[in-house]
Image 1 (spheres, protein in one colour):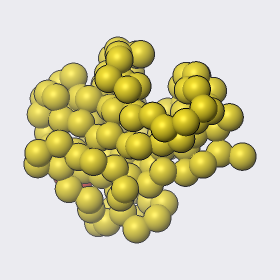
Image 2 (cartoon, helix red, strand yellow):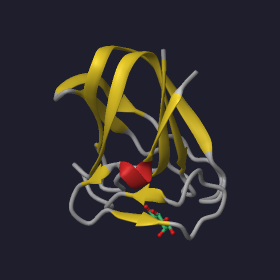
Image 3 (tube, protein in one colour):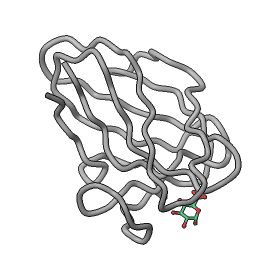
Amino acid sequence: GASRYEAEAATLSAGGTIDSNHAGFSGTGFANGANAVGSSVEWQVTGPASTLTFGYANGTAAARPVDITVDGVVVATGVPFPATGAWTTWRTVVRSLVLSAGPHTVRLTATTADGPANLDYLDVSP
Ligand code: GCU
């Protein structure tokens, strides 16, 4: 089964906060990254994995794209986190991504001034 890494355990770039004011999240909160290009949320995870699933909410009308790096290497660019209709409506973005056995750093970095969507968790599935 998948291993869940809560956003509460993630590292946020400057201005990011762990919030709990929009119900429906997993764990005790979610990551509210700063509204800026380059705003990032980074998880330390353990492979092996073939699928990464990001829980998120985006209560605006516009997608919030990110670049994804694994261990500092860009593996996907401009991955959209589409509007979910409300900040309390949580959905997933699923990516096929191979992680070898052992520790890895997975980072999402916003590519627009809106910053990232509100991020709830990262599920790592073998
Ligand atoms: C609102 C919302 C936040 C969200 C922010 C944003 O302020 O309450 O949870 O992060 O919009 O646009 O990023």
